[in-house]
Length: 318
Ligand SMILES: Nc1ncnc2c1ncn2[C@@H]1O[C@H](COP(=O)(O)OP(=O)(O)OP(=O)(O)O)[C@@H](O)[C@H]1O
Image (spheres, protein in one colour):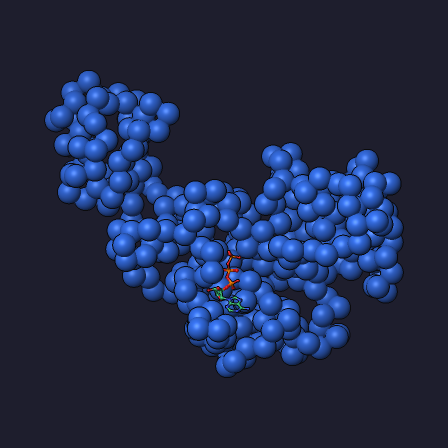
């Protein structure tokens, strides 16, 4: 599959963004990790930053957090330099790796983190938002990976941040815990918090994001609402029960892929009509027919596909 060319479709950000990158470039070793990236994070919106492994997401976040410098371009956090203490006071951060003292209990970790802020969120609110019921008297080091992620999420909220950075917050969470985090994110956004979310679960971006930014090899490939990004890929998904073998369908003109999934033939095609005609000609008894517009997953795969048709390794997780 060839990479699909995209034109940027930025959502209009009407008010001053809480944080922004403008024309940011950053080299890491031999790699141009960011190659002229523009990104604006508005209040009261979830911006999902998507990209395959190595696309530059963590680099972008670390530059916004002042953890590494930009080689070129402009970086602002609440209108200031990201290393500015006053600006940093208003952010909450949940990174992929968290080093927390394993011997402390969850209530002690909450008390410690709350003590850093002049007006911290109440313990009850932190527990409710993080879904920490029953965990307060447990030692952090003895919690499961998913329980530790929930604690990290609650700690990121302690200071009532206006801007929250969530780097793969729900990786390793069970369905109930993931839904709890989604509810918390929605309630924070309703209170005006701006959120930068990275995730490899594209249904998470589809469910939560007001805006999706797709990074690929350090460049922004798409920037717009979920619907706008989805619409950039004019693919249709055809599902049906048919006796026509998938490997035969895969050779038809306009067909991008054909597979049998759960006993159904699933065809991705540029246009549904010509494929449907071929299918009905080849199998008059074809049944359970369904045609849908491609989702964010397909749009993402098309945008980030490399020249030889392979895509990033984590996309299967989506
Ligand atoms: N310290 C470093 N030294 C050399 N190269 C680096 C360093 N840190 C990152 N890179 C490279 O920069 C590029 C962008 O990395 P980055 O961690 O920002 O990607 P990512 O999109 O966050 O990936 P993932 O989804 O795996 O977390 C990658 O090619 C990576 O190998």
